[in-house]
Length: 301
Image (cartoon, rainbow, N blue to C red; front, side, top):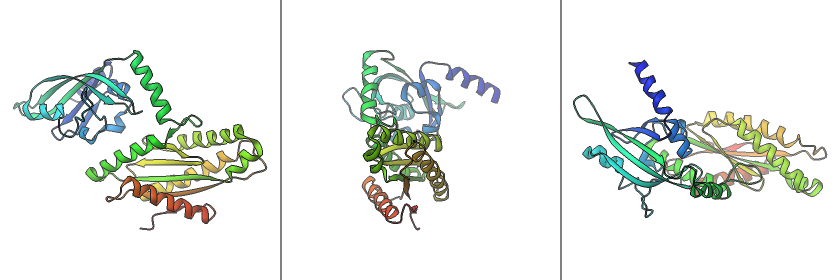
């Protein structure tokens, strides 16, 4: 049976179309390579998460949100009707992708509905629309100096992960990293060297985090790390690792007359958090870290 399952999985992963399965609670139980290619979301990003958590933000042709109240998968799970629709989903990078969707119920041997499968295909896989949307997404969601995602992007991810936390209690944490003394680099060596320092830190931070973590340029000399499915002890270990990485990266760009320091703050998400409350708390902690010569500051409880 396991061999048969692996055989079908291999076939599905070779399809150009996106394919995913959900159970009766609309939790995603399978996600093929085609779905990853079309949406930008990997299997790790979506597996065992509910499709109605607005991961893909399905909308109709008029822009109406389908995930919360008019989901075609939810309808098929209820009535068993096969559905074909044209709609939009939101790519991980933020742009909309027009897709043709085919939804079918999955039934048990006793004919009970036990889930549903959605097969979807990109309606403009190589057209001007997709190229333009990718270019706009790069401008809208990526920092052009470091190549990292920018504040706008990570704020949208914070909203999504907070929503998941309130529904699923999946713990997450945030680290904010700042470069102390960076202004002197620009003043003494110029912006080009300053950008090289930022790029070096960004590159090393991105290599130092886990596969599901997000590293973003928050603003100016500050970087934010959004770590999902973690706990406080692991976040502290990650902070220690990234501090070492950041200090080394900041001081290996030929800036011999200046010793740059790193300040760092961390916080775990809370059930009553809002995006604004999170931002205020981490901003307070980073100020405390700078006042304490870069000492790591985090939640006490």
